[in-house]
Every structure is written in C-alpha cells, then in structure tokens.
Image 1: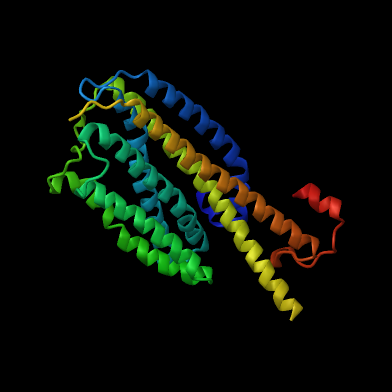
Image 2: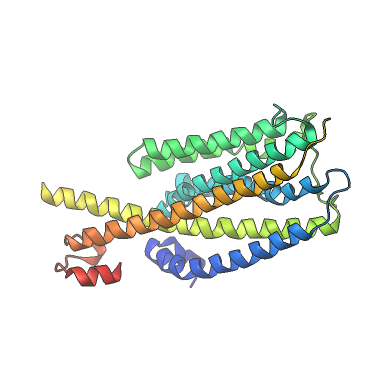
Length: 241
Length: 67
C-alpha cells in the first residue's frame, strides 16, 4: 500500500485497525524496557536520585513540542490542500500534546523543588512551556466551540501556525535569556549527559514517541468514526424532515 | 537550601505520569467504544453511509456481532 493511499479515510481506518494492536504492543515492550533501564541507571553526583525524574520530564517536553509540530504540518494540509484527514490529524493530536505538556510542567515542578528550592519560577523556559500548554487548551476549545468541522479546522489551523512560533522560543529560551532552567544538554556535537544516563533517556524518548504514535493513530480513528456518526445523524435528520 | 527527602518528588512524578497517560489511554478507548456503539445504533435504525447505499434493516444479533 502506498503512503498516499492512507489519505483515503476508509483505507486509513483499515490500516489503523491493523496497526494499533502491533504498535501498542511494541510501545509497551519498549516502555517497560526503558523504565527498567531508567530505574537501574546510576544517580547523578550532584542531584542524587532526583535525576530519575529526568526520564519522564525530558521525553514529555520533547513530545509536547513534537505534537505541536505534527499539528502545524497538518494545519498546512488543512489550509493549502483542504484535506479532511489533515483536520482529523490536527484535532486528534491536540489533547495528546496537551497531556504531555501538562506532564512536562508537573514533573518539572516536582524536580524543581528539591533542586532549585521552588516549584515554579517565571523564567523563559518554564513560561514558554506553560504558554504551549495554554495554546493546546485554546485549540481544543476552538474545536469544541465551532460546530462545523471544516470551519473549526481552518480556525484551529491558523491558531496552530501562529502558535508554532512558541516552539523555537522554548528550544532557544535557555540560550537567548538568563534562565534558572539549565542549558540544553543536546547539541550538534553530541550530548553532555554521561552514556549510562543518556542511553536510558533515549530509550524512554523512543518509548514516548511510540506512545504518541499509537495514541494519535487511535484518536484519529475515533475522529473519523465521530465524523461518520455526525454525517449519518444529519442524513437521518434530513430524511425525517 | 534545606535538606529534603527526594522520594515523594520521584514517586509523585511517576504517579502523575501514570494518571495522565492512563487517563489518556482510557479516554481514547472509551471514545472508540462510544463511536462504534453510535454507528451500530444508526445502522440498526437502517441509516448507512452514503457510499454504502440503502440497505435492509438487519436483525439485532447481526449488528451486535459486528460491533
């Protein structure tokens, strides 16, 4: 099956029905392996055992940004090609991205208290991540407010593309401003994290990415079914009148 | 900085992850069941997709099996 075939909702549903159990099973295996590696990784010489929070916090932060990037690509599909599956992809990704952004904020706060002595500071990294979470809530609210899915999709797509400005701000906030949050541990030349901690972190990042892929596929399937229900109810109402 | 017992922060983080991810999985699974039930209900009333064309109303057992 060619990738373009998946642009057809019926073929996409058939693909999703077959892929979700396999992808879900693989996600569980990688996640279990990642958690095992994270728990057996050594403690940091400065942070002690609180470094265990990193294995949740960093993948959540990555995923919160990846979900918005996926929504931005889908938003282009909505505005340029007006493809309904692009609307479906964008709408399905929003609650998942919001959940990961919330998890990033909670774990960051719980990590901050023992390390910085405070749950929250209004520094650029923390604030820009909070803005991303609020943007997710805004997009979800927009989808729920506008009844016609096509109109809602266009409005949400514009907000998504405007909100995409926040992604480089989050990424480079620790470079552009003086923040309490530490600088980036990943660069073009490699990572400053010791391999015994880096490998479990990368496994957890892969596991979270697989989790996102599984949940996104399942949420897209739900959205396609919801649209079918809506269309059939409208048809039923028009035949009744 | 005062000495803090780290365990509650670590356990709290993993508990938050369990609740948020578990809630997300449960919400998506329940939503899937609700949509399938709604489609089966519509099919029971003889309402089918435009592309499927008009169909005869099917017996309850057959629709339930399909759902």
